[in-house]
Amino acid sequence: MSNVYVMEHPLIQHKIGVLRKSSTGSKEFRELVEEIAMLMCYEATRDFKLKEVEVETPLTKAKIKQIDGKNMGIVPILRAGLGMVNGMLNLVPTAKVGHIGLYRDPETLNPVEYYCKLPYDSAERELFVLDPMLATGGSASAAIGFIKEKGAKKIHYLCLIAAPEGVKRLQEAHPDVDIYVGALDEKLNDHGYIIPGLGDAGDRLFGTK
Image (cartoon, rainbow, N blue to C red; front, side, top):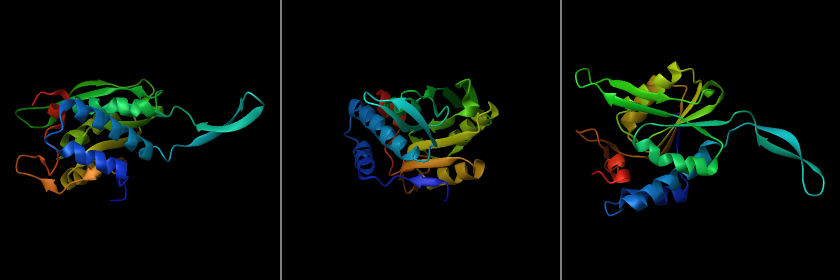
């Protein structure tokens, strides 16, 4: 799995463990999702290109390094992906934010795009597609396909928890997309839920379970 990166950082693993607990309430759950997204953002941006520029310090001129070019865009998959946005913005406040929403057609069972608004310069940015759970991979694969149709070229996918089935499907559909995973779980159950997982991330984020 050359383009799949499973986060081993102790803080990420600890916080995901707390997320899994059924006793973790919505407020704490939201805070943890935000914190984990920020930590994952730190790991996922380590290959950003830098350039050298000259600035004035209070004492003299100095050459410093800064990120080269228009660096980042964030695209949460509605609605659960919204919980990860602020964590990313805390680390990269200049990032532009888009949104994509999908629903499943009741007859064909295929994902259908109902909303997609991306930064106007998405083709020049490193886009990070956010969704807490990568289960079957159907929605993630479709969302990235729709985003590519809008002209985006450099796309990464971040999720907190993934099932092997979803990772495989996303890899096959988009081999050019790096996949960053907080924890790689055992499998999907008969209802398409990740085992051991953490239940429905959207319901737990927004208190709608």
